[in-house]
Image 1 (cartoon, rainbow, N blue to C red):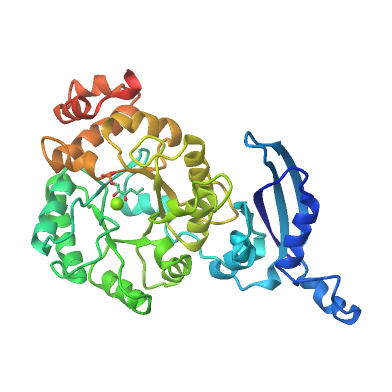
Image 2: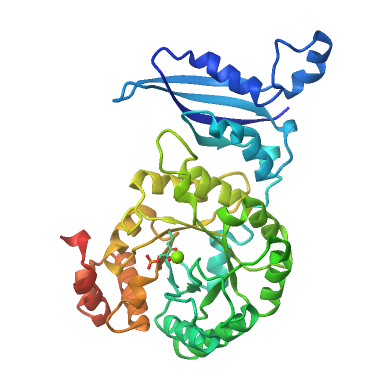
Amino acid sequence: AEFVHVTYLAHGKPGTDWLKKANGIAVGLTVGSWTDLPAARKGAMQKHLGHVADVKELGTTANGLEKALLTIAYPTINFTPDIPALLTSVFGKLSMDGMIRLVDIELPPQFASRFPGPKFGIEGLRETLNAYDRPLLMSIFKSVIGYDTETLAEHFYQQALGGVDLVKDDEIFFDETYAPFEKRIAACRAAAERAQQETGKFTLYAANLTGPVTEIFEKARRAVDAGASALLLNVLTFGYDVLQRLAEDPRINVPIMAHPALAGALYPSEQYGVAANVLLGQLMRIAGADIGLYPSAYGSVALERGETLKIAQALTEPRGDLKRAIPVPSAGIHPGLVPYLYRDLGNDQIINAGGGVHGHPGGSAAGGRAFVAAIDAVVGGKTLSEAAETSQELKTALELWGNPSEK
Ligand SMILES: CCCC(=O)/C(O)=C/OP(=O)(O)O
Ligand SMILES: [Mg+2]
């Protein structure tokens, strides 16, 4: 028999009987009640019974509460191998039952093997881009709503000229009236080919997958047929299972990028919700994200650095034959932050910026070039100031947004 081990951080009044609370969860979320079960039923129900794997009391908090880590083992025969079943079973009703936060899920090998994981992973993405031994670079269409296909294709061209490896739609790009999905994909592919003539590099385009879930799979297949080179999905709003089924579809043979939109409703609280490394690391990876975005520790919607490192670890740590998903610390990123990002994650990351590219006084292409110079610098062991001596674009970017790592 296999068990999923789920660890919760629970807060409670002084004197809480944590073993009793843990037992209540283990039984309540599996067989419902044990003591009231007739003896005849107990035999049949035994294999469905959850149990307490560990209880670690952590003492008292500043505001007088007690806290403890409770690890419960759930028989995997209780649920089907998909994330809706897993999350509903281990943190459905329980998530609404007081101060309790899901902080870790450990899947046993057989159960874990039922999830697709990344189709490309870091290695596959590098092969697709022919880009090795350096962080990848991505820019984001900024402001995108209301632009027509031709304008977006020109914006794509400018970003590609700047040397970015990928361009992504902003996650808020839903209304495609002015830039129909397949038309936009074809136009951006043409723009990528045009830029490639000048840069020698083919820039991928991650088009935002939108629309009713009843149509999203066919839409994704049409996107690939139309020349899509990557797809973006707002996983929390569409659902992890949509991500998993896209990743499992052999016809959707392009990297899938997971956006964290809405995650901030779940991860911040110390006493409630779901830890970011589970939400934006582990679950995204097992469901099949090749590319995992999350708030960086340095930008505009910052996450605490330790949290960001845990997300990156969940996306990349060795886990059986699961491919590694590439971490993309995002939001408010500008070239001056590249040394911090490189110190944290080294080469295996995508450096991702919208405003930090398009806000460059020299325009989007110059914004991309500033990042390329910054990445070359950190990979080559140079400071940004040294690199700025031979890159006007980087010099301008550092003057505008700062060079905090050399303060
Ligand atoms: C964490 C997601 C970041 C995001 O979606 C986004 O659009 C960032 O844009 P900038 O902050 O780089 O302009
Ligand atoms: Mg965005």
